[in-house]
Amino acid sequence: MESKRLIRRLLIDIYKNLDEYSKDLIRACNYHVKFQGLLLVDRDTGERRSVESLEDCESLPSFKVEDRRYTLKGVNLEDVHNDTLEILLSSEISREYSFKVDRNYKVIGPNRDITYEHRERILKWNELSEEELDKKLDRFYDIVERISEELREVEGMENYNFIVYTDIFMDLDIVENIVERDGDMTIIWIHPLYLFSSESVLKGVIAYQLSAYNRKILEEFYRDILEYCREYKRLFNKNLNILKKIKDIAIKRKDKEVMDIIREIEEM
Image 1 (cartoon, one colour):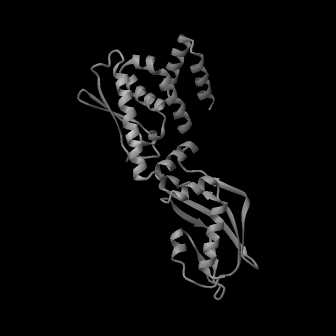
Image 2: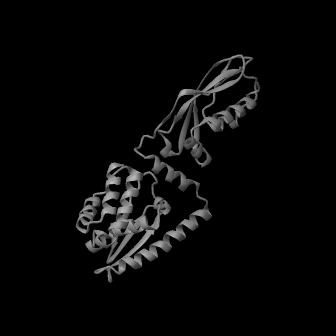
Image 3: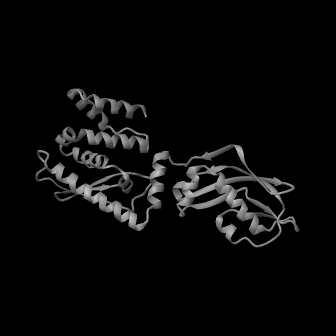
């Protein structure tokens, strides 16, 4: 078989048989795809040629290749935070081209402790077009404006100056909301991955940040802050310390629904 024809056929077979998450990453287009064990052998000279990336596939010269049986062994996502995934293959000489998936196919997770939900949200972010991002930002600031008005109605917040922004250039792997003080102004920077969150979660994020300055915010918006806690647990597999304070409020108010949600979060 001719080398370019083989590589096209092989790439199709690889993609068709990948797990869905790896397919999603490749469809995002900005991930660097590497190969381990993708070997072509020149039928005339016996020279072995290792193909290590999609770029190698594109620049591959034309030559007659030895027929081989290729096996897809898995995908390595250890370097996914650097937008790189590695497809693991093996091959052996055969009478004709064939392709199979190893019965022990596996996905090696990333080096960083990133949950599946966190990776999914990063993927959604990377897939946004400029137009879609603009719509997300418009929605975000519309919600922020409404939430800010609600929070200013809390006793003691009438003259408290705060403003909320998002920074689309924040590190997607490290999700932190940042609070800064500039004179008498509090500036809250919400991580851009929260652009995908519900209005209740966004309300909870902002209320959570401001509750450090006014306890009455926690007492009035504890249900929204709880929704933020629930999403935080899903995304990062960690509990926020404020959960205990919410539990105290729920016990005091005999709020069974909130207690049930707290138990759900604790058992995640």
